[in-house]
Length: 207
Image (cartoon, rainbow, N blue to C red; front, side):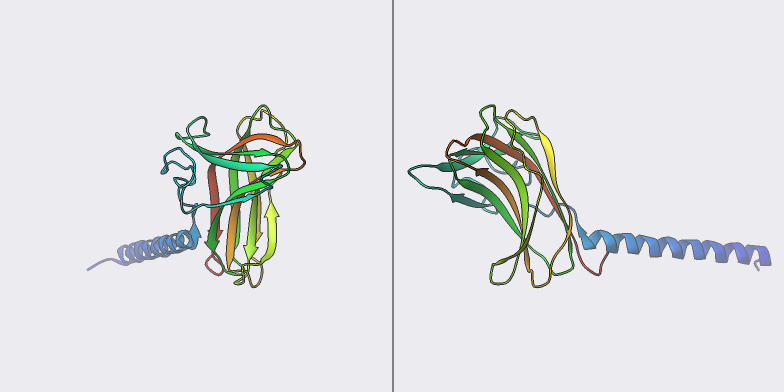
């Protein structure tokens, strides 16, 4: 038969083990509620270099330009990268806009964070590159958008650009992670590289 002191020690041990189990469950629950980088192939490593259609199918491709006066385009490249072997490059000539986008399902009240590494070419001028996250409705209309600082300088080495913690607004059902390159006038030119994209969603009520 256990002495009083031994029974108390046993109870304390069980209590501590119970606390550890509860804490472990809470941590696992919290981890499940926070998706750590939900973007697919954020470093473009799973796709060989080249232009469309070899560009990652989970990344949407957008070009807005005038064929006679401006152009945009890009590809997955092994010319330079922040980490790994690949990055994605975009070029612009004239007043035009190009972006890569990745759409994620979200719910009002979720918390979203994003970041991207960006590098510019020596002839980069009259243009701007940045990260933009758009919150859209079921009708695919933009309800709200948040942007990182814009890079406008030529020959910039790899630098991290972020979108700070943002709460998903009411009626938003998707968050669109957009890598933008915009030519601001007819003389805009240059290239920009994007690499190591990151996006995290903290689910409302589970954090």
